[in-house]
Length: 116
Length: 116
DNA sequence: AACCAATGCTACTAAAATAGTAGCGCCCAA
DNA sequence: TTGGGCGCTACTATTTTAGTAGCATTGGTT
Image 1 (tube, rainbow over the protein chains, first blue to last red):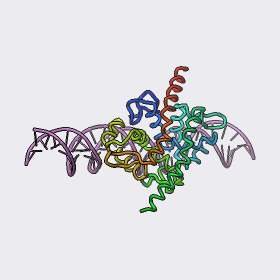
Image 2 (cartoon, chains in turn green, purple, yellow, brown):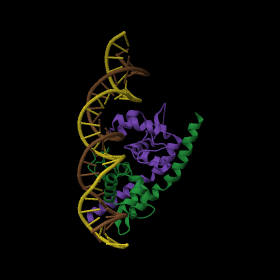
Image 3 (cartoon, helix red, strand yellow):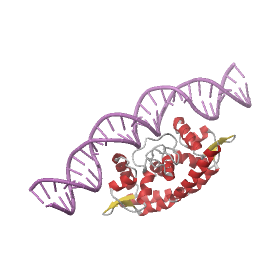
Image 4 (cartoon, rainbow over the protein chains, first blue to last red):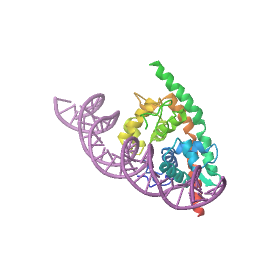
């Protein structure tokens, strides 16, 4: 159903409306998309470095995600390697709090399991 | 590779470390997971209502996501239907800003395309 | 009682995305 | 000229998702 890279304004995987939030969710809802942004937040790196940081994600997927994220204006490539654009860094600002949250979530879940 | 529902502490799709943030990214990186949380933020609803709100997502996927999100402590079901747990609402607080951001992103992207 | 509509699904097939592995062509330094 | 790192592409196998049909149950209505 998706016509390729999710783009606000046109139908995306799972969404026919093209509402920006749905396009964004489609983009982020692909394997390693969030992980790539997360890793790139610590600075530019090469394809293979990024691959290592993302636990040996297959080059097929990595390359596909990079292209998508580039077309979406979040990732770019220069002498230093792949990195976040200004907009990408901006998005990361929203993503950042998920780090701490996920740890609280992990604690809550393991506590919940102790109860049973 | 994924052993089912992504759970912090155990390996998940695309991650062998089980770091909470990776488990969270795995959970969120599945089709409609983010959309479901987004829609449920406006209050509890029935399975079919939720399906309608999520643009007729197939019941197969919806049911799978619901189970995953329930096991992850984000979604629950009561008399009023499916809804977010306290933790789910908490996560939504982090997700909320993405709405406005996605619209700025949409504007930036279309401006970018005008330039060429 | 018989009907009806809505609910939460399950079953099934087809299409698409992802995983996983191998290796190519390029560049640069030794 | 050999060796290593680079950004990939090619290919197959597996998993996920899409899409459609319909079943079993519940609750109200006639």
